[in-house]
Length: 226
Image (cartoon, rainbow, N blue to C red; front, side, top):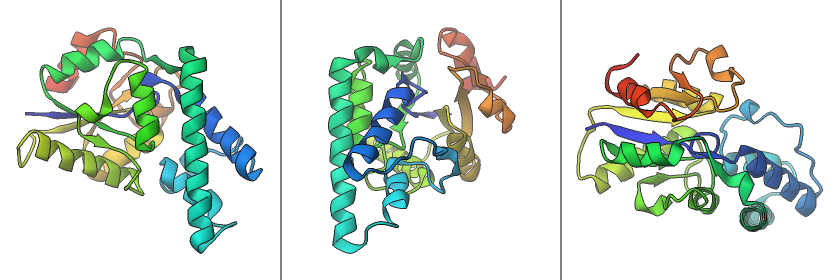
């Protein structure tokens, strides 16, 4: 059976704006570091852990770095959790995502793979009615790169679904880094371009949808390729 892995921000949840805003605000409030103009795609590894490490490593080292990293992480998670309660409209699903997720799990094995920390991933998925811990859940708590995160999702899925191999792994993502990760791992990529910015098409992605409304078309792509 196929394994379908879903990214979270911009793929299942329309939460990139609030996630980025909380991340930027936390760096400014905690360390007076302005990261508002940074392009995430320029980082070697686009995960919360890796980006935080790259920004803080020039200012802190040793135990001081460890304390600074954990303070940043905790303050960000707190800010995101408050935002989910005070501004729930910023945590909407990509149109049709929850229904498609439920349809997919009735047909395939599924998992979640995100560059977010696990707690922030749970917050965003809870907002659209998905319990992350019910599924194989790769995140950046223990993975530096997105490749490691996806591989962890696959390892967890093999354990959960009691199989040594899947007939195919398909990853749904919205970021340039998601596409590059899939190429590096030789995994089929399905792009979600909910903002119609064409960034995925510009870098060579072939299979792209703006949402999940036409679920039957996406299922056909999973089965046969367009």
